[in-house]
Structures are given as structure tokens and as C-alpha cells.
Length: 416
Ligand SMILES: *[C@@H]1O[C@H](CO)[C@@H](O)[C@H](O)[C@H]1NC(C)=O
Ligand SMILES: *[C@@H]1O[C@H](CO)[C@@H](O)[C@H](O)[C@H]1NC(C)=O
Ligand SMILES: *[C@@H]1O[C@H](CO)[C@@H](O)[C@H](O)[C@H]1NC(C)=O
Ligand SMILES: *[C@@H]1O[C@H](CO)[C@@H](O)[C@H](O)[C@H]1NC(C)=O
Ligand SMILES: *[C@@H]1O[C@H](CO)[C@@H](O)[C@H](O)[C@H]1NC(C)=O
Image: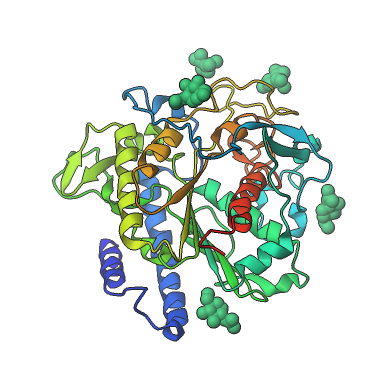
């Protein structure tokens, strides 16, 4: 088991994506993906015992009580319109697609198909105070992505956004069969790679599951018994090799940085060869993000690749311990603290010190209003209410409208 993982990573290291000829790339990549999926599934299966995987556990409040944060000054005065400062307005032209007609919405997120009957939650548009987010022009978006590679990297929240973007774009594609997953894979919760190809437009929209962004390995030898696995905070995830020559990269991380998915599962932090048993989650998250940042600064060519980091997704649990929640019929009119996340602040802090420009898509405050938009019991596990994940269509579509507004409207951008 361990052997196959190690061989895999040295195999990865020996090949540089940038040097390879384009024509050998495709079959090599396909082989690597098949291998990665096989290894990835095994790794997920075993590590699942160590780091929990099915649900985003709602114990976020415990994550930061042992650490003080130094917050960045996030007043960016260069923009005349802060698109993240606004409110939700009813708009009957929403939703942007029908999930039952899009094969890339996983069952667990299709709330209407899972029995939700109220439909108001589908009708909200985000309205920034001093401007409007341009309505997505799907044909323009499809043309802009022609010959390109877009990759989402992160956890299940990233997968939702990936599904949403595909469905949004598919509304503009006549032959739905021309859009397919490159390995014929089904969407599952543990899968490491999914790539959907829009063959008429020669682009793919990919998803890489990397919930911590850094490497997750079995514990080294001679460590205390409770340590079953470690996160190597100074090493970016092995599959990061695959992200390098994308045209657009959208990252997220945060939901897995909680004691219930780390310490209580025997997963601790490691830097270099040394185990850091006392390190707080907040410090570890910051360390991991700095590793990510230096990877971006060293490896990414900003002339080619446009980088986004989407901030933390707020949840709406009534009682965290009991995992109870009520999905409301309407968005909240007042938010009580969910608009603020130490994870999001850390993202701003780290990004502010980078060389390669990174656009932070700060969806935390806007999504905080949307207690009406979670999957609740209309998921694939109706016995457990879920106020972390979101229905599709829904809030992740709005994240994508914002993403597309950056990609499609700004003429000076490298991304055309
Ligand atoms: C941002 O600006 C507002 C008003 O201009 C001010 O009240 C607030 O303290 C500023 N925030 C930070 C973090 O500097
Ligand atoms: C979505 O599509 C399904 C299947 O085609 C259809 O039955 C349903 O009425 C549609 N829903 C909406 C809201 O249009
Ligand atoms: C498809 O896109 C790739 C880049 O992603 C490019 O190298 C290739 O030439 C394109 N193929 C066609 C037929 O345009
Ligand atoms: C949640 O439920 C637990 C167990 O019943 C209880 O002890 C706790 O006070 C509840 N928390 C809140 C915020 O209601
Ligand atoms: C929330 O759920 C509880 C039972 O779980 C119910 O008593 C209460 O009325 C619900 N609140 C709302 C606003 O729907």
C-alpha cells in the first residue's frame, strides 16, 4: 500500500508537465489519471479511517478558540464597487438551469428531485450595492473557454461549484452528448479526479479532490500511538503536478480543518520530519496556505494561468452537537456572525504577500444570508440533515457568475 503511494509520487516527480510534447501528453495523462484514481481510491479508503470523509462536520466553532488571529486590512479601495457587499434580491429569471436535465449534478445536491417542494430559494440574485454582476452570456463563456483547461481544486464545496459551472455552460450546448466525463467516471464523494470535456469547444472543466491542499500520509515510524496519519504542511498535495498548466485554477479549503476530521481521527501535523503535536489548527491552516502560496509563486506562470481562491462557505446549523438544522424558506435578513470566517481572513493575509496575482472570491458574507439554500434533508442521506452543503441550482451558481464576471469582462486580463 505505502509502496505504491511512494512509487507514484517519485514517478510524478520525474516528469515535468511543461517539458512534455503535447501529443504524448494525452495518453500519458490518461494513464496517470487511471493510476491516480486507483491509488486515490485506496488511499481515501484507508485514510478515511484516519481523517473521516463523508460529511463536513459542523464543529467549526472549536477550530479557532485556541489561537489568536492577526487580521489583514481588507479595505481594498482600488475598486469602486465591492461586489461582495450587497444583498439578495428576488429575480424570477432564476434559476439558471434545471438540475434534472444536467447529468453532472450529483443526486445528493438536486434538492427538487429529492423532494423539496418550496421553490423560492431558487429565485435569488446577488445585487452588489454599487453595481451589478453581469448576466452570464453562456455563448460568450463557451467561446472564451475554447481550447482551455479550467480546474477546481478542493473539497466537496469545490465539487459543487464544478458541477454548477458545467450545468450552467451546458445550457448553451445543443448536443448534450458532446459533453462527457473523460474517463467515463461517475461523480462520487471520494474520487480524486473528474474531468468534463466540452468536445465541440475543445475545453475541459476539471475537479481535483484535495481537501487540505497539502500531502496526507500515513504516520512516520516511532510516533505516539494516537497518531495514525499526518498532514505534511510543507508539501503540496502530490496531484498538484496536474494543476500546473491549467488556464484557470480555482482553489478552496477550510471545511476539513476541524478537530473532528483531524485530531479525533488520529490525524496530526508534520513539518519536514518533525511531528507538531501541539500545533493549533489555525496555525496549521496558515502554514499549509503558505506552502500553497509559495508553490503558486514558484511554479505558476501568471501569463498563462489565472488563479482564484474562493473563501470559506458558511453553514447554518441550529445545534452543532446534535447535527440539527432547519433549512429556512427565505434567506436571513440579518446575519449573526456567519459572514466572518477566520479561514477567509487567513486566505486574504496569505494572498496579500504573494507575487503571482490571485483573485480572492470572497463568498463568505454573501452566502451567510442563505440559510434557505442548504440541502437539509433533501440529499442522498435524508436521515441526516445537512446545513453545510448547498442545493443545485443555488448559491454555487452565483459564485460562478462572479467567477465568470472576472474572466469575461476584464479586457486587460491575461485570460483574454
Ligand atoms: C474599512 O473601512 C471602514 C470605513 O471606511 C472602516 O470603518 C473600517 O474600520 C475599515 N476596516 C479595516 C479593516 O481597516
Ligand atoms: C426539470 O426537468 C425535468 C425533467 O425534464 C422536468 O420534469 C421538470 O419539470 C423540470 N423542472 C423545472 C423546474 O422546470
Ligand atoms: C485543443 O486545445 C488544446 C489546448 O488545450 C490545443 O493545444 C489544441 O490545438 C486544440 N485543438 C484544436 C483542434 O483546436
Ligand atoms: C445542543 O444539544 C446538546 C445536547 O442535547 C446540548 O447540550 C446543547 O446545549 C445544545 N446546544 C445548543 C446551542 O442549543
Ligand atoms: C425547526 O425545527 C424544529 C424541530 O426540529 C421545529 O420545532 C421548529 O419549528 C423549526 N423552526 C423553523 C423556523 O422552521
